[in-house]
Length: 123
Image (cartoon, rainbow, N blue to C red; front, top):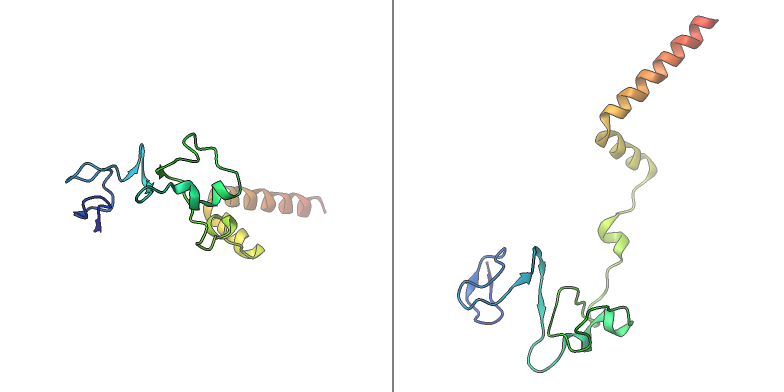
């Protein structure tokens, strides 16, 4: 359980809106995406990584009070590769591919056996 940022009541972590005060907690249509909110009179853009490197395309920039892509400049940034595609050794990648595509592995093995038998029969 987590607390609502507005009324501080206990809410379910998958809730889209607070059942007590109606505050929107998640991005529209994307229940897994957190909606970041500015506190007080400050704007999120003032401390956002995307605003700092001028790669933000949010229409409300630089006066955004709510954003789903917000990344705090003061927080350490993780590399995208380490999050989405962990580095594997070649043999691990082959093993994983074989586990995901057993039908293709079987078909390739059948073709290899038939080629070997054909070559042996010709001698």
